[in-house]
Image 1 (cartoon, one colour):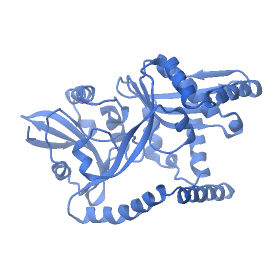
Image 2: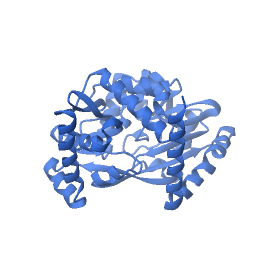
Image 3: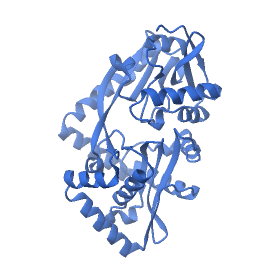
Image 4: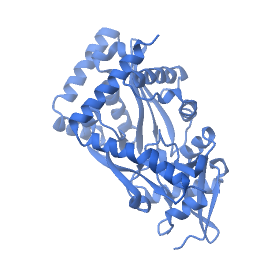
Length: 363
């Protein structure tokens, strides 16, 4: 089918019928119900990002799909929530044919950038410049089945983590895990830990940005079937020692912000927390935990398989597209060069750690 019209609105202007259709389309077309692709996440971003928009694809005057994006100066566009969103793309009725450049033209965009394009978003595959593994934990067989696979894939991980759990309890007091913690103070503690981790490792502190702070705080109180903020906390002797905030749908938990109290680092509280989370998630009917793009030893130990996500950009001729290419392509090529060479990657990580140590020394 050929698209007849594309209207661009703010996320807050989505009607109840639009929201219902968005949810139905995701249920029919998405292999996994990732909460970052929900209408609720889009609307939350719209409250903290003034450039957030939705292109509504219409056929016969009726909505047939949605393309969420953000627009900034020079018509430079990006995926909704880029920088924190772990799943991106369009939500379209099966059979709908739309030219990506028409979507950009309707939104007055010269470029649309993405870095976590969902598998199956064939519309944008011609514009992909990189592919990355996003490790996941498959829980369709339940927790007992997952534990069997965990033992088979990593003989010492489970045994060592359980031993650390017992040591932590002896040292710090009885352990208590809360899968769905509603205490705002616990969320603030997690954000403080995470900010310190960003600074310590030489990375940009996401929580130094007001819009991310506000978005996470807002999503922590969001409770809908397709997008619910989920704060999980591990307590030892009544004190929080590790926590995680993520988003869940009925069947998927997207892992987002994990952190722990450095005072208890020798007890691996983050790993203990994750095992508790996985067990409770399986009991809650969650089929998959998406650990998110990025290398980390704990992800390699916990995962059962990988999804593939993509990065790239759709460009239209113009000054904004030229600016995007100049500011993004040379650094992207350099990052790819480093990633493909382990000795350079290790050197880059050491450099980031050195930057973090310098930050810690500042008064």
